[in-house]
Image (cartoon, rainbow, N blue to C red; front, side, top):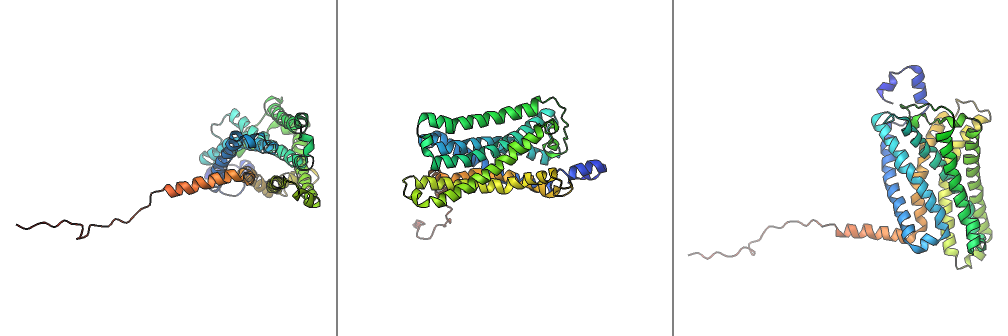
Length: 336
């Protein structure tokens, strides 16, 4: 907390303290920067790898991963970028409503969009592993693969565009608090806020957990039959990848929304506030670590990255010790 905040009145200090974790801003700045840059690089590498490789581009199990990574880029670039600027200057810069609106789009629309798409990722794995005949023809692929993705992405964009930009309510912008106070007015406008909390967050997280756990149980029950299949290796990679990303998402996202749910159910507001702030902060690690968890499925990309690193290290010029000339190397001068 900066000295300017310490000298402010009690109400503003209370608001500030209730909106930020106690980790110093300089520490949060470097944590976000050091995790965000490698995550962005990894995201672009996976996007390029899937798009440029024809086999990966047409593989159905890659499409949801690609969409989630694309949804993560606005968070990695715009949301984290606004945070870093805020930590540097101590306020939202530039202090304009459009900056707050764009920040809310990234912080709410794309973050919750990732949660929704991860729920579909877990459900889709059941189809691809145990009901692959449903997507064996063009009609089935459209109905059970492309259409759900199109509907989910369309719903996410329409809902948050309307909720943030077009709902007839008045926003309050707090330029001295991260994410401008993180309170878009739609959250208290009619049933939109409750719909966003229950339908867009709690239900997808629960669905993802149920689908992921049931997938592991189904795999255990059909383990012998699956291992006899020629596709077992690809299915095993999909299962491992789902387990990694779902564990990451559920382990961090579920506590974020369980505490507000407990408040709705009667828990006094003063309980769990500090823990909730920390869970919100560490929620960004879902975005940071998801590309690396996804990388587990692309062994060919991992080999390329490894070879690039090894070759670059091998091309680095080696420093050799400079040895002065010896008497044997100095030509003899004839005396006259």
